[in-house]
Amino acid sequence: MVSRRNYLTIAMMFVILLFMFQFTGVMKEQLSEYESNEYADDTTTSFQRSDAFLAEQTSADACEVIYVGEAGGAEESVVKTWCSYRKRTFFCSSSLALLDSLQDDALQVLVVDGSKVTSEEEVAVLRREAQMGVTVIFATLPQSSVIREYRDLRELLGIRAVIADEIPLAGMHLFSGFLLGGEEIYEVTELGEEERQDMNPSVPWYTTGAGTKTYMVGTLSDETIEQTVDNEIRAQYAGMEEEAAKNSLLPAILWRNSVDTAKIFCVNGDYLADISAVGILDAMMGETYDYDIYPVINAQNLVIADLPTFVSENEEEMQKRYSQSAQAVYQEIVWPSLTSIASRTGAKMTCMMTPQFTYTDEEEPDGENVTYYLKRLKEEHAEAGLSADSMEGIPLSEKIKQDQTFWQTYAPSYRFLSLYADGVKSIGEKSALPAEIRTVALGSGASGQAVGYLNENVTLQPSTSSGIRHTFLDDFKVKCMETALGYSNITLDLYSVTYPEGDEDSWEKMSKKIAANLGTYWKAYEAFDATTLTESDVRIRRFLALDYKQQRAGNVITLSLEHREDAAWFLLRLHGEKVTEVAGGSFEEIEDGVYLILAEEDEVSVEVQTGETWQYQDGGKRGDGT
Image 1 (cartoon, rainbow, N blue to C red):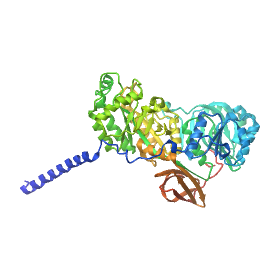
Image 2 (tube, rainbow, N blue to C red):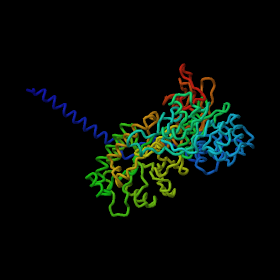
Image 3 (cartoon, rainbow, N blue to C red):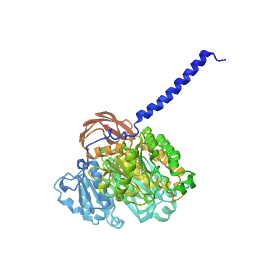
Image 4 (cartoon, one colour):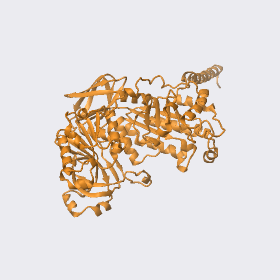
């Protein structure tokens, strides 16, 4: 039997516990300030497009990087963008003849469209530049017929043999140590992977010779090798083991040859035509010098686009699939799943909201749930943005006008600083953007766009992945962008949840894919910071405005920064050395020989040390240093 004294003690404890829980809930409500964007005041900068380092056309004599090819082409755009990111001067010429008239020795990197190389005289010009220490990059290769014809060209490229003018590939094999993220075999090996295979084109079949190092090869079926390789070629590999001979025969896709102290890089395909190729160029620089250091953005975004939760759209389909209204589906099914995914992966969400998709019907959005979502966003340290999408494709200015009435009523104090649009064209006129918008996130309809500025005041953040569909080529491009910028912008568009076209658009299947993909394909980049769009916006502005110089004396690499407003990040790639100390900042090793350097002062010193077992063998082959 419980005594009166014990009974009172127990009752008092329950009262205290009840008060504590109630008080915690009340204080959470009072202190959360859910009606405000927590990133609005903490992430400010005065940098605009006019402050950015832009690699505009300048005098060829003073240029560090020259592209020989047609102006306005995809490769020229990639090289120019890369120069802006790398803070290098740039010039474009349609002919190699320009090189004969250069008066200065500023040229460091020469990028060549292979179609501009058609004679022995032009091959001689390229060899001369290489012998002078210029790094030569073939953005595309000359025609296979030209390569067959000129032995000097084959020697310059490091090509041992031209086996076929065109061969269909089974896939690709990317070796480790070139792009961030490590080795990858892009070949269908399991049932169900067929839909991921988009890296099996037909390419000229070149094998590389001694003194080269190959970073990616095409893979072939045994049947293709058996049918194509003749006895004369087989005789060249007679002394090798069968598997080693087979590997040496595989078509080279990305490789490097050496001419004296200079490097010749070759791209067999159109991989330098996509903006992600800025990462390939950075990887090539890492293979050119004893060390390489360059600035990165350091931002990993997860954008949840088109979150329509304030009107019962497509009611019949929603009831058929989920037995609930669209509002209930998003609140009770989608949102808990999203927060779980973000929590497990460490991602930060930016939710791009639209009150409705349909503006021609009579149903008006209900803002009753706005407070609920703003509270949940605050708890998750997430951010809300605006969406420019609609079913009717009404002008952005009209959509924004109608939406602003809704937001002013139900979220009058919240500062929406980001906007989502499926493509650049859908953004429309500059005047349509709300005055407070700092950055525009682009969906999959804007492939090929570079991270940069939309106009003087607004930055552009293209999608780097849908998160749902992750093909082999998607994965390769992610590796490239992480290598170049330490940046990703995963865009999960929920429009298809509200207006599904098939069973694959069910949230159950979509959520499983996004959770699996985030936990698998981005795990290698966990050293980079998870950010919202507003956070990455300020990092992009500072990255584009930053300028720097670097030099090395003994074991110390010194960075001198200009226009540094706050923290800045760099990737340092070493060969046979490791970082031991950083003055003026800090460091983290993100994979073997690659370090993320945080610069907190204008002068940063990085001390490196040669490890006892660290060796870098120049002139290796097949990515294995042999």
